[in-house]
Structures are given as structure tokens and as C-alpha cells.
Image (cartoon, rainbow, N blue to C red; front, side, top):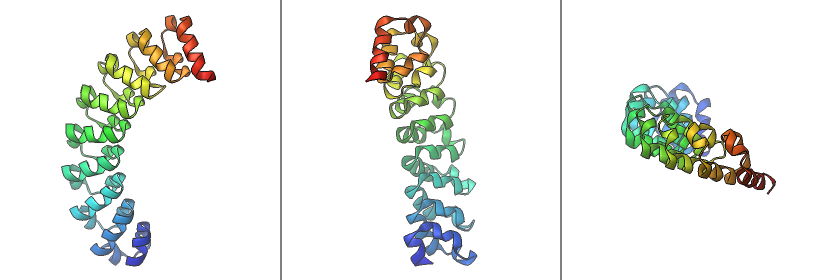
Length: 210
């Protein structure tokens, strides 16, 4: 079994209960495939070294970690650095931890979805998120959806980001031009006035036909 899990960690699924409780076997398995933590014994799912090995290999393995370690800062930080979306499985306390959330959104902007409301209103955190994935603007606070720097960054990164901008910025010619130059279909989310602006429409058509 040790040879098997070193080649494919998920082979732990077919191990006996005894071997799923064997620290050496489980450690070898999670180092090869973090998700194999799912098949480890409850005792080993709360073993810090085993869990760290698992989330360092695959951050989303945090979902299989026992509850007490989802509140362990070192474990969660390691997980979100490997896969920002792992923030979904962190404790509420750590979803409110600025350093943890910042690490998560830098790896995957979508993880802003799981940040606390306070951090969804944090300009630095949201800016980092939209730089990685402009679509994450949808999870920012209403106030920051009206922040011109953040929205401009978001629309340059993702064609759909303009959809989440405030009405004021959907009417901002420079912001809309940046969006349609990224992808002409962003014009769908511009104000009616700018959808009738000849230069904006021309820029949008250029990117659609290019």
C-alpha cells in the first residue's frame, strides 16, 4: 500500500481501515495527492503535520480537515496560498483575518466571495482580488463597486466586470472605453447614453470583429 500511495495518493481509498490510520502511509498519500486526506482516519485528519502536507499539495484539501484545524492559522494560510478558493472551508475567524484573505485573493480573486463583509470593504484586499480576477468585483462592497481605481482595474481584467460597477461608473466614458477595448460585449453593461456613443460603439465593434 505504501508503494501504491506514493504512485497515486488516491489509492488510500482502497486501503484497509488499519492502513488509513497508519501515519506513514497517509503522509505518503497526501504528499502525492492532498485530496487523499478524505480517506484518512479521523485522528490523522487532525494531525497537524499530515494536514499541512495535504494542503501544501492541494489547498482545497482543507475541506477534509477536522473543524479545529480549520481555525489553525498556519494550516489555513498554507491552504489559501496553494488554492485561494480554500478560504471557503476556513473558520469564520480566519475568513476575517486580513493576511489570510489577502493571500487567498492574490491566488484566486474569486475567493473574495468567502471573505468577511469587513474585508469585502477593504480597498487593498478588493484591489488585489480584481487584479487577479476582475469578475470578483461582484463580491466587493457597494462602496468599492463605486471606487474608480478598483473598477478600472477590474474591467481591464475581465469583460463582465462592468456589470458589477455602480451606475455612476457604468456611465463613466473612460471606464466604459477601457471595458469595451477589453471586450466589445462589455457594452451591454454600459449606460444607455454610452451605448449610443459613436466612438464607444466603434471601439466595441472593433474588438468583437477583430
